[in-house]
Amino acid sequence: MKTKQHFTFGFVYVIFLLLQGCDCINPDCNQTVGFTLIDRISKKDLIFGGNPTYFKDSMSIRTNQIPYYSPVSFMDSASLYLPAADTIYLRLNSVEQDTLIVSYNRSKASYCCHNGYASPTYLVFNGKRTNIQGSKFSLEK
Image (cartoon, rainbow, N blue to C red; front, side, top):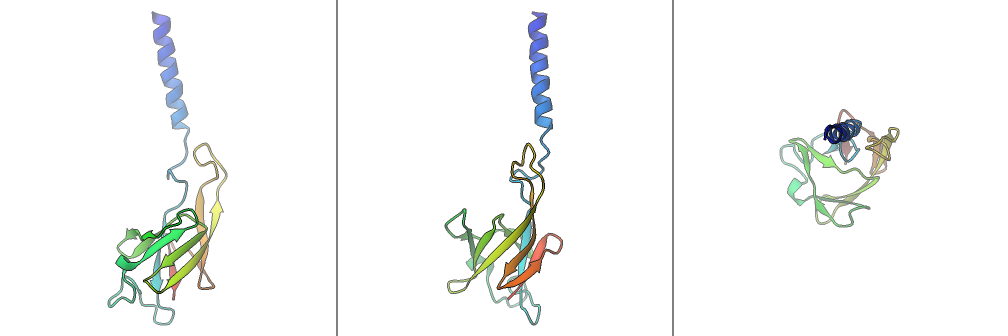
């Protein structure tokens, strides 16, 4: 009977150690970043500023992995969530659509993140390269 208890305890302990070895903090292995849309000349926020040009409720987004448009998610009160994809299609309203090409820096693969942890380094919006500032991109339109 004692041998069975030792075996059970040992088995549970090994499983516990295996689960502790997972070094992924974000389960989808991608850094969460946001973006704001600003006027190229005045630097006015076109979504969250006073008298906005675009309305967050009418904006939608899709990627090559998700072939249908879905509402844009909010990262915080002044930025929209950028999904983890190489190509993002941003529909600003029923007429305007923009394409964002995102470049990622990937860490080495780990037990939890088989393709490595992806963190965006820059994106191309309307032909212009934009670097990340903190945890968000400022896109000029």
